[in-house]
Each structure stands twice: as structure tokens, then as C-alpha cells.
Length: 476
Figure 1 (cartoon, rainbow, N blue to C red):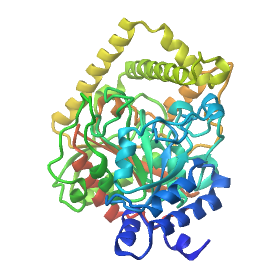
Figure 2 (tube, one colour):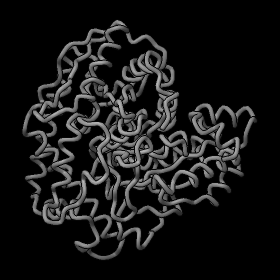
Figure 3 (cartoon, rainbow, N blue to C red):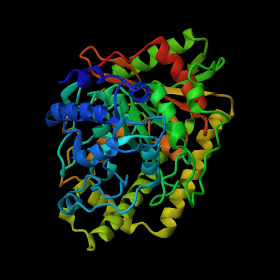
């Protein structure tokens, strides 16, 4: 690699933007360094699946917006993030075969561009983002940079692998059941799921959806600065998170006071949790205690309700059905079973059998769950501390499609991710932090969850943890 590609490989996006602002490098030079790293590492990792390097070169050489990330190269996830003039496949073979190009940017993508990013391509995603691993039939498996035999997580697994490997310093990601936090845990990164309604999903999706979007990154300051740059509603949004009282970047280094933290170190649904994940969360609890916080066992009891998984599955499958209908409209024909992976086809078929009353009842049940969960914070707790995942990164193939048992990957996923979906349902902000590694070098993330709209509290405490147990110097 050239010296610039090496010298900037592990710099975060804030540092790279500062270099451009100071005139130490140009946006074009940063882009070429990123391209060099992508071309060197991607053949083994398969994190980046679509590139538009020539268009990115033209962007970098032109007049860039004077946003906080002016001149910094980045990548978009291959899931619902439309970029005008470029293809989007959602991890689906039928769309890969046709490569339809988007007519407009989504609002968030336009905000990424306004922030000054130079967008160079797309990262791999499981088909329609449905699994906590990134192994779509269409594009093949993304490998974890820490161990190439293991999953990088999902659904933002391509984004996480690209950032963890040093291809780019930060990458777009989205989270409908843990899809920012899961790969952040698996790849040793920061992954913040914002509050529902914090960032618009317009113009194609709305904020009543389980999903949110932001990024995976290597530093809290990158995550906070990006949240400042892209937060806020879009046209027609009806779910809108409260406006912060000051920039999120100002929360880093601010004293959060002495907080009451609930420790959840077991699976609330009764399944197993790997010893390394238990160790990770108990070590984090000890650090928080040393920082002056009060940590004691406690969590919202609604998470232990056996009905939660069924209700979440009803909403998840219905969202899948809607997504499949949109893909059919995009293709101009009905979808066939061989167009879609079995795990997603059967969910779409199930959604067709769900009546309007069934769906309304699932929504009502989710409202009950949201209120019961958020009540825990209202009753005097400040944060919930848990593992992000129930296991360290799993081997590739763990969630393989099985035509005879098409929902088997979803059942396996439920055991892997018992801690993340609840907060998509409740709409609360949650962050995964890279605070632990196993003896054989695999990352294990720890999750913090705050009350609705309180990303500020999350960032203050996360910054304390970043200072107490820095992770920035750890690389695959």
C-alpha cells in the first residue's frame, strides 16, 4: 500500500476531515487511499459489493459541501438506501440480475452527501436485512476481519467488516432488530441505534417502522458528529423524537452524574448466554461502578414475556411482505419462489395470510410492550446494561437457508440476539460498545440502553467507558 493508504487506515472520520480542512490532504487523495485499501482487502472479506469509483472521483475533485465530514470517503449499505443514479439490490438475486438504478436519494443519503462525504459504493447485506449475518445468496458471505471463518454479523455486516478492516472510517448502517448493534459487536465497533423518529426514513419508509438508520464507526466522536449532521424529521414524518438541547458532540466528556444502571446478564427469555458475553457485561458493570455509577440487577420485565417474540415476529414478517411487494412493483412482475431466499419467501407468504385485524392486534400489542418497557426507565432507572449478543461472533453458515425448514435460520437468530429487538419495538436508543475480546481474539460488544430520546445520556456514559477502556488502538 502507499504510505497515505497506510497512514490514514486507522484514522477516524473526524481526523480525516480535519486533514482535508487543514489542507494536509485533498478529498481525492483520501478517496484514492480508501480505494487502494478496498481493492487490497475486499477480495478476501467480500464487504463491498458494488462500487462507483469513477463517479466518486468526480465528486471528490469537485466542490464539496462544507459539512463536518467534507472529503471523507464512505460506503452505503445495500438496503433501502437509495442513491440517485446508482443500483440498489437489497441483497436480492432478482434485483442483482436487473440492477435497477435509483431515481432519487433517500433523505438520509442526501444528508450524508450534505455532510461532505464522498460515497464510493455499497456494502453487503443479507437479503432484505432479515438475518443477523451477512451471507446473501446473491452476493456471498462477508467474512469477519478478526477471523475469516466467522460471521461479521448482520444485517449491516458488510459495513462493519469494511470499517473494522480499515477500508473506510465510517459507513452507513441500519437497524430493524439489532442490525447496527449486532455487527458492531461482532466486528469490534461502535454501533448506535438512535431513537425511533430521530432520523427520517423518508421518502419511502416511515418512522412507525421498526427500523432506524445511522452508521457503524470506530469512535464515539464520529457517531455523535454524524448524528448531529443527519438528525431531524423529513417531509411527512409523524413520529419525531424530541429535539436535543445541544449538539450531541458536546455530550462527549460531559459529566452524566451518578446514574442508576440495571444489569441484565442472562437471557430474559430463558435461553443460554455464552460465558464470554456474561464476562463482558460484568466487567463493564465493574467499570461503571468504578466511575461512580450504581449498578444492580434489574431489567424491564416485559422483556421476559414469552409473547414478545411472537408479536415481534408478526410485525417483522409483515414488514417483509411489504418489502417483497415493493420489489415486485420495481421489477414489474410478481415474485416467484426462486427469486427470494426460502427464509424470506415463507415470511412473505405468512404475511399474506395475516388479516388486517391480526396486524392491528400486533401493533396494539407492541404499544403495550413499548409502554411497559419504557415504564422501567420512568420508575427511576437511567440505563440498562446487557450483552449485545448471546454469543461471540458465530461461524459462517450458522444461519444457512434450509428449504425443508425455511424458518430454521430465524429460530437460530432468536437465540443469538435476545437483547436487541426489544428496543426496536420500544423505540429507545441503544448502543453497542467494543469493550471485550475473547481469548482467541473475537470481539464481544456490550449494550447500553437509555430512555426514549436520551441519546445524550448514552453518549455521556459511553464516552466515560471509551476513556476508561480505550478500544481505538485495537485492529484485526
